[in-house]
Structure formats: C-alpha cells, structure tokens
Length: 164
Picture 1 (cartoon, rainbow, N blue to C red):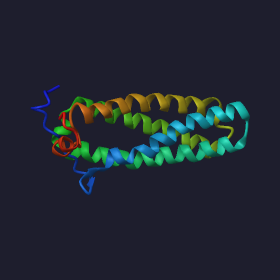
Picture 2: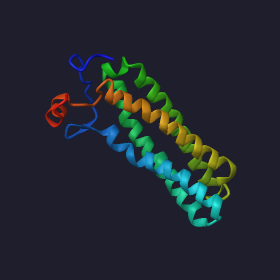
Picture 3: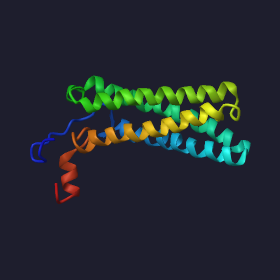
Picture 4: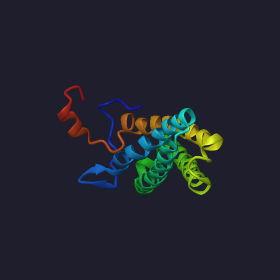
C-alpha cells in the first residue's frame, strides 16, 4: 500500500452531486439480505407465516437492489482504468456477481415455490451463504475505499480530519 503522502485517489465516474453511487446504493440490499437470515431463523423458530412473507420481500429487495447497485459498480469498473488495475476490485466484483446470483436464486425459489415452503432447507442455506459472502465482499469493498481511495476525495477528507 502506498504511503498516505503518495496515495492518489481514484475517482468514480458514476456519481450524483460528486458522490459515488455504488457505495451509497449498496446499504439497502445488504441490510435486506442480512435481514433475510433473521426472518428465516424466526420462521424456523415460530412457524409464523409472517416471517416467510417478510423473507420473500427481503429477498426481492436484496436481489433487485443488489442488481441496481451492481450496475453502478460495474460501470465504474469498466469506465475507470485505475480501478481496473486493482486486483481487489476484480475480486470484489466477482464475489458480488456470485452473491447476486445466490440472492436472485433465493428470491426465485421463494417466489415460485411459495414463501414458506422454500425456506427449508434451500432458502435458509442460500440466506446463510449470502450472509457469509456479504461479509467477504464488503471487506474487499472497504479495502478499495480505505487502501486504494476509490471514490474518496482526499482534499475534502483532509479538511474534516486533521490527521490526514
């Protein structure tokens, strides 16, 4: 990792009012997919159909929201040469595609088979595996921000923090 003095930020091309969209858009799908694990476990413990129906909605929000956020991330990967040169960005992107595939399969399974019948065993398994992949993918995304300054305005950050 380069020293802070030589660290050059890597700007994002997909922005709104100067703020990168991908990191802003990913919070809701991540929260939905983590919430899906909780609703699956709640259904397992209570057999209350409410949790199965909530899981159906959370899986849909996670899959569709992840697809939208992924489009912004993919566009940055394609359009910004400096991002394409970072191996961590490719690993993050590949894991994100795997995660999106699992989330979409989970949603399709619940939507077609019924919200409650799809939970055991495959729905719960896919939810837990998605939660694990979110952790690894999020770790790599954080590395892109904190180690490579992807989408970070260092001048603005230096104005807000005296140690930079």
